[in-house]
Image 1 (cartoon, rainbow, N blue to C red):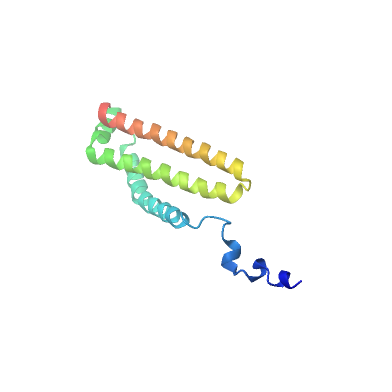
Image 2: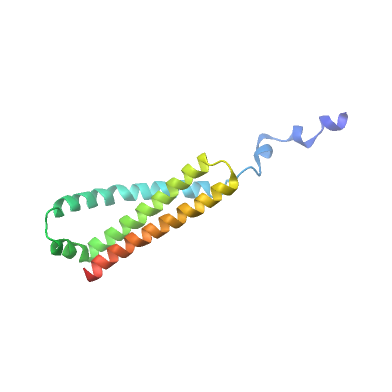
Length: 134
C-alpha cells in the first residue's frame, strides 16, 4: 500500500502530467505566420479592391497594361501568396480544433494543404500569364 502512495503518477507536477500530450514547438510560429499574413492582407486587399473599382468598365487592353506593370504584378503575386497561405493556416486551425480523430484529421489536413497549394499555384500562373503575355 505504501508503494501506491509514492506512485510517480501522484507525485507528478501539472507540467509532468501534460507532457507528451501535444506539441508546444510550432504553435507560436503558426500563430505569428497567421497574424503576419493578416496584416499583409489588409493593405494588399484594399489596394486590389480600389484598383478593381478603378478598372471597372475599361477595355481588356487597359487591364492588361495595368497588370503588366512590374509593381502591379509584384503586388498581385504578394496578394495571391499571402491569401492562400493565410487560408491554409486558418483552415488548419479549424480542422485541428474540430476533427478529433488523428488519422482522418491528418488525411483532411493533407487534402486541404494540397488543394490550397494547387489553387494558389493556379492563381499565381494566371497573374504571371497576364503580366507577361497579356
